[in-house]
Amino acid sequence: MTPTLVAPPSARPAADLIAKYDGRAPRYTSYPPATQFTAEVTAERYQAWLAALPTDEAVSLYLHIPFCARLCWYCGCNTRAVNRHEPVGDYVRLLLDEIDLLGAALPARLSAGAVHFGGGTPNMLSLSEIDAIFDRLGQVFDLTPDLDVAIEMDPAVLTRDWVQAAAARGMTRASLGVQNLTPEVQAAVNRQDTFEHIADCVDWLREAKVGSINLDLMYGLPYQTTANTLSTLDQLLSLRPERLALFGYAHVPWMKSHQKLIDEAALPGPQARLDQSESAAERLAAEGYVRIGLDHFALPDDPMAKALAAGTLRRNFQGYTTDPAGTLLGMGASAIGGLPRGFVQNATHELTWRAAVKEGRLPVARGVAVSDDDRFRAEIIERLMCDFSVDLAAVCARHGRNPQGLAAELASLTPFVADGLAEIRGFHVQVLPPGRLLVRSIAAVFDAYFNADSQRHAKAI
Ligand code: SF4
Image (cartoon, rainbow, N blue to C red):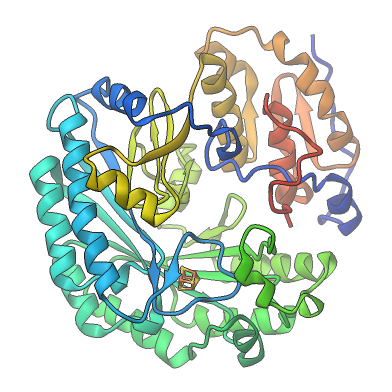
């Protein structure tokens, strides 16, 4: 019998505990995490996984558009700045070919219930390019009548005409990057937008009846303070977006060389980052937003808040999602897909991706097959990341396991319990409010691949 461990009373996350546990755990947008992807997953293997997809389940689609009109210095995405449209047009022509390659590898004409355009800046696509992509998707997939079409957007190049045309082509959700509205912060990251323009973008989206608008914000940027985080938030709350996301800036200049342009001396320290993040979360809660997972907030009647309440919230490569599909097919350079048999990632370098598609090969670079043990651990980690709690006995029952087999993992949670970050009752693990920001480190206890000494992940805070 596993002992019941109950935490001592505690209020807020403390910087010393964050320093103690911030073991640079993965973001767990997949399990196994992307650090386990290898070149053992080839185009041939992916083809076999595609051929084995169930024909009676709708899939979701992700298309990556790796172009931007500007390069924001904090950016961690796979993208590049272009000042001509020609490379975008060439890329889209090959993207259409990749859709055909995928279609040829599928066991049947499958239904698709969701399409997500990410980037980069998908609103750099011309309207005729959007049309061509939807035409080709419609030739290969049965696009469901209630198709969910989500598009990430850079407000700097968004126009009213583009919004109206994209809405006419089925856009249901839009996500606008804002980050911080303080001129000093914006200058330090090479991204300047006014509140007035953001408000115009939101007006255009509402006018076009786009039902769900998300605004992305950041903390931890150079010259960012709690005061300018809250003043940014107060301006944006006047727009009453359905969702907001609040991401911590991950300073990894050894991986993203343009981040070297950021003045490290101007970056807030761990305590300041924590204050920014928690003060923003408290303000959002006071304004009626439901806190979802690590970094999302939604109005109570938003589907994401409802999914949280129902215990059906999911986590995938786009972060938290309500998408229930068991298969996500990725297209475009660096796109990641998740299938019942494993995860695949396309070639990250655009030239490698282009070369493969031109040769008529699926442009896969790496991936990982999932075992039964991976599926079992993935469910535990996903529930912790989404719900901040997990009923290990119930997960074990679904996977034909004995929960006593998790004794070592439960023992590894003892320090988190002693520090008031988690609570264990029988086989039920609950992450307590002070432990929320460290949920990645708590989830890592159940990660069979986790190496606490690894420096390959960004810090949790
Ligand atoms: S617009 Fe978005 S994707 Fe492009 S560089 Fe800026 S943050 Fe990155």
